Image (cartoon, rainbow, N blue to C red; front, side):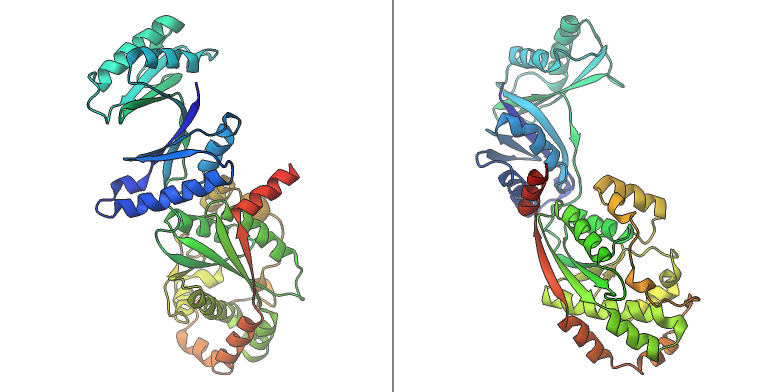
Length: 398
């Protein structure tokens, strides 16, 4: 029995006239994953599913696990390709279940190929009866110990006994580019991941206060970008030295407005990068009311500095929800380490929680805004992260 991998589409099954556009991007993304593992494979597309065949057996499990990180997939199934024949369904089902301990079973059949003479219910009944007798178990349609899946499609059939949950959402690349303001904390990596799940290709910008703070936050951010790149295959990180600009704000502006002014300048610099990268929007990890700069009034004042949309995927989430997602996607353990946040550098003891636009504009009038933005932009560096290279580094480490 040579294994095949069947992957089912998630949200794109709801698309109509432009569905083929989403399917092509999803196939491209799946193909990128496969090329990172093996040189020979056959990838076929079907309505609502892709089937991957002729892959090295020793790599099937690893490939299936890697596919769980591909947005646009509902589930990933390792199974066997068989002829459309009840006897073969029973024979393969017996092999798949031999050696497993279970007392109840359910057979679940889908029959898109209506040329097959038996209905789904009839297939379930016949294969289920065979397995109940063969293994001395009983049927349970609500909470079975084992579920056997049969898909009868396009002249063939696929039989498998388990589904690995996929990442869901839309394929990365279908929704355009965005630029995420990334720190080493919990929030912004999760916000970035959520926008990838909506089909966005995410670039990153990190602001640091070196040499007044350590290199460690930059190193942490690079580790976070490496993890997030596994979900979108390629990333670019821009690193912006922010300390000189902060010093100017400290010297010229009221203390209680410092953090708001920091954020407004970050938005302006990020927009400069976003326009250069042809991004459509900025992303932040802000949640309403979480810290002083994230009150509704302060968010409005900060947004006034922007000319493009600022998306906040975590706006209505609490910290526990964010940390749960961070654990799920693999960024939690890096983000929990101490780091130097540039917004905490020279931060006021009592930051404004209800700033007015007038006082902020007045404070900025004492600063040469275009010159400060241009100076920070001119010192910005960038680095590209490729998933294939990251996988090679993992293999070396292992």
